[in-house]
Length: 127
Image (cartoon, rainbow, N blue to C red):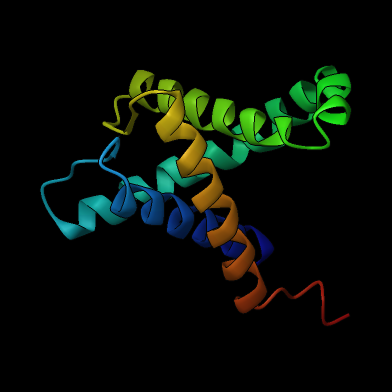
């Protein structure tokens, strides 16, 4: 159940970024295909954040401390660009045009994930 909540939250967050920014695109012929592709891109984004992000954060820890945490925004934007590259390699049309768009998109994704995970039930919290 927790994985399903995680998957839905990532799909909604990526969907919000696609909806808000012209530089983040995921063209699909119909709504069903768009929903499926959003779930797949959300899964890729989740895997990138679970595997690559901790390593990058550890390696960039001095910059994160030096900038009082602002470098985390750069790390998040890099994870979104990496998700775009992996998605394109997998045959999906998810594209992020440029670092500035990735930076703004990562802020939106972080905020939407914060709200969605607060609203959606988590079975682990009830215990």
